[in-house]
Length: 371
Image (tube, rainbow, N blue to C red; front, side):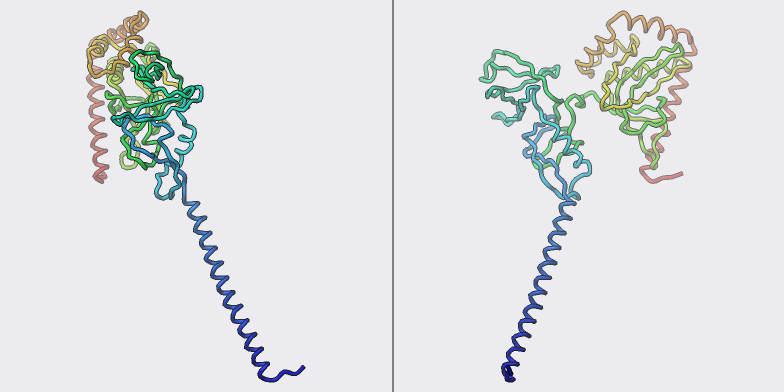
């Protein structure tokens, strides 16, 4: 059927309008799709750039035991998190301070805001105490502040983690901020430098060693056990002969005694042996019987921790240690005669010279001086 020009014009206008609307709708849909894709891409990028980490939900004091109720997991931007924090998740997730029966140990604060460890057994809360020996126990009578003690010792499922430093709430937890309670740094611990040890060829910072002394007779003793070493870095190169170790006062005196006697006796060697699996291997028991002078000094030294003094007394208060000292080490020193003193003076002077040279190289490396 024929249409008049007005109808054709109206139809064409309608079709043109529909086409324009479709184009506009297509543009809008494409724009919205791009926005959606960009949003999805940004969310994926943010997800990739995000990590889960634990933060404190309360203030914590240095030396305070960390319980899981103090921690909250948060998702944070990876660029804002130290690289070592991401690996701490497994450490924290696998850590829950409990007794062997699976009862959680948690933290409550007294009226003076002092933290206290508590445990709930049979729906009753008990405060946890710690003896000087390090053992934890709860006192069933003291749940009601009774003065009568009825100790029940607790066998924990893991060594408690403690805060190395005081931290505020929302502090991101990393391994550098935590320590196992059996690795706490005692007041008498100092960083000591030694340059006379024979070191393993592949020793690097972070390795654990025993320091041993071997005499010409073949007698071989452990002087100090399982010490983490740090090797000084000079101009980007690790020192060949110097190591740093954290030693307690009694260990420093044991090392001093061993060094002096190694210097006195020709053919002696004081050396380091490396642990193959330090995380799994227990520390060896020192076996080196110190001389009478150092023994007397240990007994009168107020800087030595009582626990260490008890261990030393148990180690050396026996005839076997005395026989080893008199029959082998003392006799070996005596056999050197006047040469022992000469050996000592020469080796000690060499050690002092090496220390001065290493110190100068280290300071030069810090100031940018290069020969």
